[in-house]
Amino acid sequence: MKDDDRVREAKRTLDRISEEGGLSASPVMKSAANSIRDHFTAKDADRNDRVEVWGTRIARGLAVVAFAGLVLWMVRQVSG
Image (cartoon, rainbow, N blue to C red; front, side, top):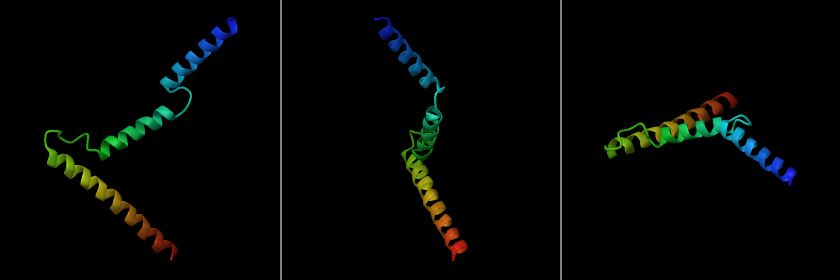
């Protein structure tokens, strides 16, 4: 019984530490992913103005496509 209590306490401690971000970079990665998601879903746009929200989403999506195209063009220029 004593070992079971120690195992449960250790698991609780590890869970608490992982939630606080002490075990790995996963909380940092989650925060970064949430930040990127919020950026591309236009969380910073006025929610009452649907045109602004969709315009922001479209513009940011097109910016990613343009950036990818620019990178591909530059790689072709350098390699060929």
